[in-house]
Length: 625
Image 1 (tube, helix red, strand yellow):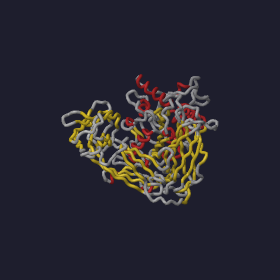
Image 2 (cartoon, rainbow, N blue to C red; image 1 turned 180 degrees about the vertical axis):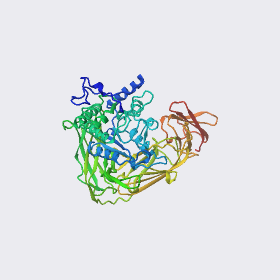
Image 3 (cartoon, rainbow, N blue to C red; image 1 turned 135 degrees about the vertical axis):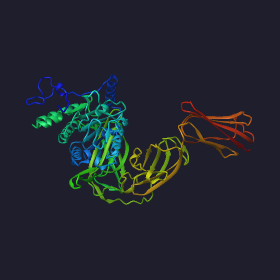
Image 4 (cartoon, helix red, strand yellow; image 1 turned 30 degrees about the vertical axis):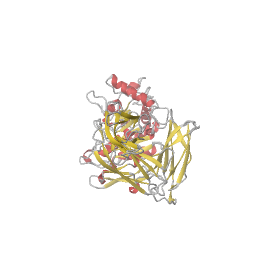
């Protein structure tokens, strides 16, 4: 047989649900593909963590949809079925309150080996950032997705670090769920067993299956899975199979469905948010450069009653979806097919607000770069407290063709630093990998659409090829639509001097730039730099300053006579990595007496956080009375 099926073990009354006259399954069965007690413990730990309700986050409201392109083996044209099925699934079988992350392979370029590495990167990024469910439609085998090798068991799977944001995988594809060869491990097995992340469960086929029936089963499972809060993932799969069995006498459909199995806990439910968020006040139309007010409440999904919950809500306001048309071109270069589908509308606002007694409200300003005349702007909200979470959507909001007048003609304020530093000065030395921190403020808010070249950009070392778009990293400060922050993980730069140039736009399309240089330390070695005192010589007082590349558990300042007698000492604990104006000395000794005119020696000593490293720096201070 061209399938591996173990569902017969669930037919305890002796009849088979794949023959006429059967009355259905007696129990639901799934599989844990473990080989050792350690692997068994890993899966148990993953299930416990997933069900513990401690790993809340907006990832629980995100569905990632991956669709194979139109090209098969050797680049042969096969039609638009994979993305067409994904589009149907997204539009008609997925609740609208879930945010879609669409990874459609035909939107990504080939490399010289007919692979699409940008797709691989997008999939890993989506999984590591967190996605409740990832759905793949297309070709596959136990080692990879698609002929373009967009997700490989040996390469991408080990890169997953989503242990606290585990995903359900659904693969409408061949052989992803392969598990029955003791000498060969399938992708689904590895995803479920890996401890660093991967999957909380996998719905996939064990052998060759066919696109039409794959898509129909995929849609049926989604209808059941998202249509009930009471069913497990495994139950949803087997109920879908049963419904399809009795809805048609088409024998191929039955055989195709038999090859799909669930690897995971059979009683595990999908981790969708517990409550709903209802918007009680929101704009009936969005207008560019106008400030809009939104209010809502937390409600019980089953009863519709108000829930008295305290916490916070993450808010995402999106412009209308973008209609896109893709042309199917066959091997002879002829346009033989087309598909109209939607892309997510640009983000207009992204921030967080406080929830008090189950109520929340916020304001946002719509940018000039908005889809005038659109009909589908959306407001997503995700709420979280110590014990529960919830989500909601206000959609189909029209966008006005008019613009509200403004006299704003200045760009955003840009304040830059690294890590937790409060006193960064251009030219300072920083530790390798210390993140760039940008604080942006503007009375009109910050443009987050990224349209018409109006994104937040970073140019490294004045090389235009080193332009990085930071727009997606921006988050408004809690309760604000005028100020926010970006944290960019500054990795991959060699030690030495570098420059950053930042450009940002406000919602009225006024821009600002900030440019500065810095030095990346040669290594992770603990050090103290730029030690000096000013003024020197001193009359009334002098200030001692220095920079730390890494935080110190303690820093001390000692002042000595030229004969070596210590006359003054000061120290401070838990000193962060930063530039510090450490202490202002008034020229008095430990007894409070003014020291005599002359030259004195000072020593600044820094202790590393684990006290393994101690560094010292000496200097001279001249006192004039």
